[in-house]
Image (cartoon, rainbow, N blue to C red; front, side):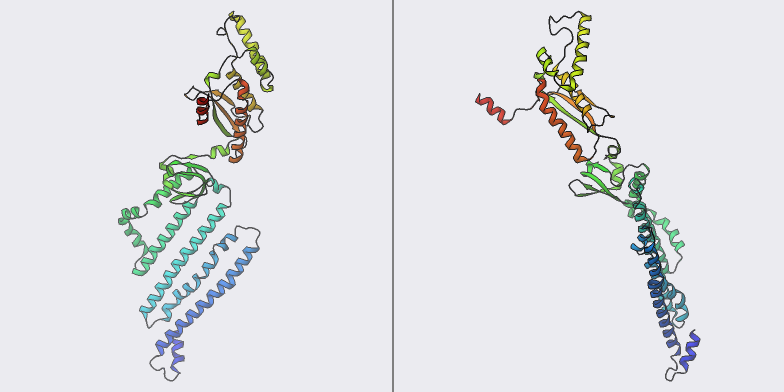
Length: 415
């Protein structure tokens, strides 16, 4: 090619002695022109045709490749490759300049290849996120590791091109820099190991509700990355937690509750101990009008009478024998009320238990599970249940314990 151009230039008057320089310049200009034309042909011809075919396909997953410009980046690889191949043949007079152009085009190809791999990783990650399994097994940390390795290898190759040595020799020399690399990449390495543990043990997933008290985080997991986990708190603030922090410290994951058939209600009513007493005939007559415990009172009365007859207790003293109490009757009412409640899961534990007395009174703990696990609905159901219990507790001749308020003290002074 250069010889043909030299012969043609030798026929032009005034170029004597400059044929070689002019031939190299024309050859290089021709290569740049061909590279530019090839770029437009590939980008606006081949790549656009591929994009059009993908857009018309039934699947939406391949559209993600277009979104992340995987194919359009390939178009930049073609002109760089042509310049890399043909420059040594065009710049025969200036080998030093040829070496600079060849190395520059080689570096450009390495960078473009790294960008193509980056775009491909982003595309595969987005495609993976379109499947439901991505919520349980997040892989963004692995994608970031792949990108980190890609750019690290690209950097080594670029350095080897600049200094004129084999990349393998540079990789071999990295063994002596292991300690330095471990220090530089300490957080990514720890994050990667923590990500492996989180994924393999399914400790946390995208969308999980977590409580991380060490970092004042309570909300839904937005993202699990290589070195950080993002949590959107319920006040819409975002807390960034180190990935290894989830391994080193304890945290609460509410996924088990979300996957279970019910959400637990566990709250106590504190009863004034001075209001607890045996049930007399008048109280039993009033309690018998309550539909939920009619059957309970009848069965319990028969059981108590039978027991007292066997033991010879005829009621001379209320201490002797067995008697119904208003607190026991109230507990039976609570259980029956919960069993009849449409929002309580009847297949899970339902209980009204008596806890140890405290300085605040006798706790009666309501233990049951709401069938609706939505937070707003759950709070409404729980509030409705306790609204009802606080309202009816006086019908059992019981009082709720409450510390004296300022109004109580004023009334006491006034009286």
